[in-house]
Image (cartoon, rainbow, N blue to C red; front, side):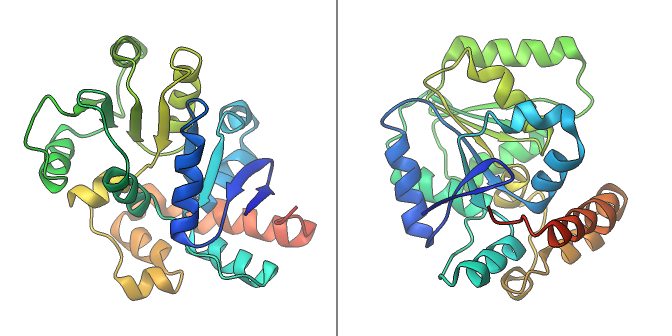
Length: 243
């Protein structure tokens, strides 16, 4: 099922249905996919400069359990969360990946090495792992993007967080019209084990935000205590969460 939230195109349903719908889109052209969090929606709402980047996203999934539960209630349907790490692992298993044509871009070299081990990648030439530091200069960023463009990957997994990964996907799209770009944020950190995930019971009850806030208070306090609550409050007032 397709719906629009804040001018973003979502595919919702049970997990397997969403995965199949995304795979079906591979047949036409390169697509940009975002497991969309409430932070993404808040960023888009409160930062007009990022609007053009988010409009470049072709498909959003419900990365947020709170959003998933809200849509299930609003629509009266059983909707499952399509969480970034689960999306990556499902497509990794179910998609025919051509050697040398899958790229992972992360902010931490050690994390990428751990990811390689977790994905049981034995052949170093099978997949490509590139680091882009959060403190990278414009020149360093340009060199990384040029490397990716020259390689023309079939699949590109961006794991450097929003809104930066959305901006990079936008910059790469015109040069890589056939590449499927996935903006999966912390998914690479979680799968690699570089960061701990919230316990399953917290995830299922929409409390992952609390676990992450306690784990990284200095980095995430503004997101979870100001930006997202402000967004939810405004959407409730406007009654426009679901269009």
